[in-house]
Length: 394
Ligand code: CMC
Image 1 (cartoon, protein in one colour):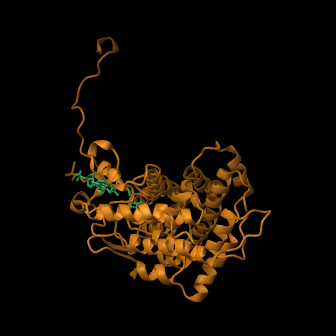
Image 2 (image 1 turned 135 degrees about the horizontal axis):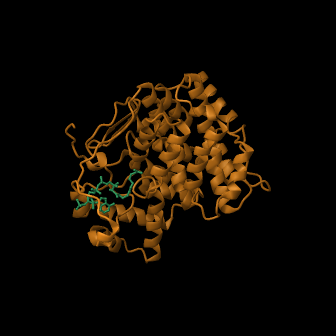
Image 3 (image 1 turned 45 degrees about the vertical axis):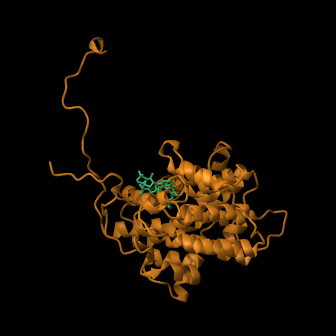
């Protein structure tokens, strides 16, 4: 058999050719389809970025209104999905519900399982997924709170409707806060794609077996859930809260993070690819300042601790030597918290943002007719030996 190169964690292995996202970790550059992330975060909307990622170009006004209109039309989910909520144990993590229900969409749309779907059918699957995942995501929260589930409102745009489904009550008038809508758009845009990260590679690998878009994205959601990936945003807030509870002494936690035997890492620090800074973290930090200001929460103790921690780590030789900088997850949790989104929902928010990227990557893989993914290994187990009868085993 052929020669196999070991590359644990795929640190230096390109698994595909892709025209979606450009990332330069040394220079801290991130572009979607050539457009700098800074410009998109400032000027675009989440659905416009989703269109850009999935279809390759910024939409015209008519294309965007068509895309957004289709998504709005499909935000309702089948009533049977509501019933499934009743079957989940009350402590089920929202990410588990999200991945299960996204996979279950195959049961409502079995045609999505066919590997030779037409481009128009794939577009419908994409629109359904974009639309229904926001409803399911909001419902995971309502379910966890024991609140009645809110049906989507088609007079609202994507982000405003999501916030409405999350936070409104049938018994109260719900006011849309434009500052919050704009912050949510920005956060989702910043998370929308990040080339071949763990969850996206999962989506491509699962999809390479001709699995459906729903099944592939469901697997991606589970990959994202892990604390070393998207789950880090939940861990960051829990860490900041633990530091606050402990009296706010950041140096103690930094010392612990440097001690390899402690098993503790500074959550929200470090990145496999960014070795100078994470451009998303810069934008998010600024957005966090703006949101807290707008909501009158600028004295947030967690923001103070985060800023102190960042300063202390950035001047500490351990972090300098290893090029460990705050990543996208470091400040995003502070914004989510200010918006009233509970900690358990943070990774669901990440998944909602990453969805267009997963879709674009899955679609690109299909269109490029990539072969099934099948890594090799270096075998390090026993050499051939004979079967030992039970009585002779020690
Ligand atoms: N705190 C303390 N030490 C760290 C940290 C940290 N957060 N991250 C890396 N190190 C050390 C690590 O111990 C190692 O030290 P040494 O060379 O002495 O053995 C060195 O830095 C290199 O780390 P690595 O684990 O080999 O690097 P990696 O590229 O395999 O891991 C990472 C990248 C993001 C998983 C890691 O930095 C980490 O665990 N960070 C904390 C979790 C986190 O914030 N994840 C979110 C990532 S960004 C968004 C996303 O993907 O969802």
